[in-house]
Image (cartoon, rainbow, N blue to C red):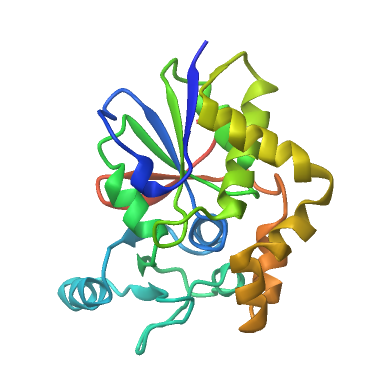
Length: 240
């Protein structure tokens, strides 16, 4: 029976991760965007922490790459793509993306020492649960949060993934996991409205990204599970 824990913000991640399966969650919007990208024409993403690092890496690589990401929800100057999952779903030219965001890519780098690092969203929650059950190791769901504060949508998503895990196997939950699970159960029948009412949901809508919020609220619509390994986020699937 695996132990399931939740870091309600990235800063709560402490201790040794080498024998832990970790899932990074940043619903609005990095994890949802990575899922959308790998579901469509992007073969892989290279997450980096800073805008300058992204630009320098693109200059060094011989193969053409997109620059994608955001700072404070806005696409950086000179970038090809922002952080809208709908942008990535519309890509026609297959090419990798060098990707940097305020919270999500920082979370990936923070948990890189885990035995397995997956990317979770509302869209792939069931598939994430299916991949996790392949190993009998503790599970840590990491809510990226927003600049050190709790993001409700990430907590709801952690609870959704816990619900999917519980449908497949028995688990032992920490107190933080029980908080996330209970939070999800309280909104599961009105999830789209709950995501819209969060701080980031309201802010994104006010800035013209309301369609992204609606997209991010879709549950279990894809099987792709992004997996971070050796500096790249690549697609994996439950059947693999």
